[in-house]
Image (cartoon, rainbow, N blue to C red; front, side, top):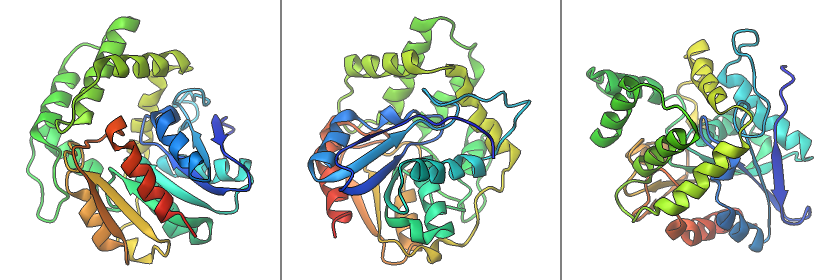
Length: 292
């Protein structure tokens, strides 16, 4: 196992039921908003969030010298749980974090009290391949997951063709533009709040460019996800998707269909981020799901 340091923090009483928040690919743990975390702790939960390896304040890796795969990123979930003394926890994952939560629920069911999956794709569904084909303008085989929205595809095609931004201001402007896209079109976008968040992300990163290693990790083992295993999930599962999801539209319903007794919840106006307007509804749903 690689000796990569993982930054984490916890809130609430140690005696409260633990919730481990798992953020998406290339994303820092602080993308779980402070106000949302506060609502969970006020509801009597011990909440833990962390930065994935190669993001934020966690350790960065020279990928050429020490390559890793998404198996390692998944195993970091266990490392964080162990470091906080948790034999089991309620897992709440966003985007690729939801994928990791599904994997852990299949692989180590005894460690998962409940599973909440937000803005994610079904484990084993080949979402990465769907995205690549969409960006390349290639047809999707029958049975593929739904494609991202045309706006999403156009944004990332333009991003791939443009020269990389240079300097703090240009980088943060680019990060805000990406957040605006992921926010979706269902709710107003607060650019001032977005700038504060992206400045915080920029300033607390050990090496902002290291997040690209998550893509290299995916290429190092493209078949990381087991296929046809979601029926094995035993944990009570709540699947949440925004009505204006741009990256993985309709994927939530497929997850809920494949996991026994899973419940699907749609949040009006929400896209692929966790906007303030949704915090109360999301927290209430997760507190209810993790009760008892």
